[in-house]
Image (cartoon, rainbow over all chains, first blue to last red; front, side, top):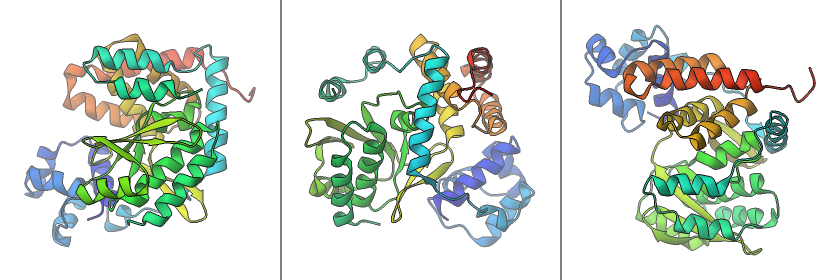
Amino acid sequence: MSYYAGSRLRRFRQLKRMTLADVSLRTGVAIAQLSRIENGLVDPRISTVAKILACYDVGFADLEPSRPEAVSMEDVITGAERGARILEESGMGPSDAQARLDWKESRQFDVDAERAALATRA
Amino acid sequence: MRNLEKGRHALEKANLEIGGETVRSLWLAKAADYAITDRASLVGGAAVNLHTGSYNPTDVDLCARLDESDREALVQIGFRHFQGDHFSYLFDDGQEWLLEFPDSQVDGDVMTIRLSPDDLLSVIRPESLIVDRVLQATDRTRITYDEALRLCLALFDKADWQVVSDDIRTRDSLEPGLRLQSVYDRLIGDARSRWKDPDGA
């Protein structure tokens, strides 16, 4: 099963506010197997997927919904510029990369490489 | 699917992007995606930057499963491997960018960005990215809270908040100790009070 289909199954489960244990109880599929299915790590039998889908009151067609068109690069750039404008107008300003690295370091992360890389930016 | 030639070509595209960090990060991610066999999805700060335009990411985080042949392929197209699943790339203009593979799977949904007619890149969806940043903000520090608030503000009139709310509620019920719902409620309140429509509506 593709990761995309697996992530759709996870989304359906979340929308039903069910845990893996809930689904396991209702379908008879082991929790570990459900987790592997949601992560796209196994190819389950169609009958297994059908049981899981029934649990969420959805069908096979819902696994591959009509995906929206891919977002264009132009739209991404426009969105990023608009986001920066929103932050400026709301008084938030840009993110402080040095402060973020300080925070990561305080969490015992090794940030030497990130600091060195950041220093190469203008 | 691995294609080293396309990977090198994507790096050339990234090299041509001088001063355009958003586009550069996308081509760098696509180059890595071409080098490995699994599909890579962009997450983390570089993904945040696509919406806020002012995150200044220090690295590019990708979710994908890596094996030794993938690590070798990344080096073959020009990345430097310095530890585990951490790589770097030195651009012609002197900028060094870090590339990291923090997880094999995206915790959430993905969307697709079309970099060119032939180059598609998987990126974490805005709603899942918001949840990720709210999760980070449960550490109750100013820095993570402000980062989450920036993203909420930048996407205030664009995100599907019902999807975000559903996800938060579910996770909160599974891990009540994080007090995710309370952090989220505070963030939304702050975002609402600060929000100014950039289009003047």
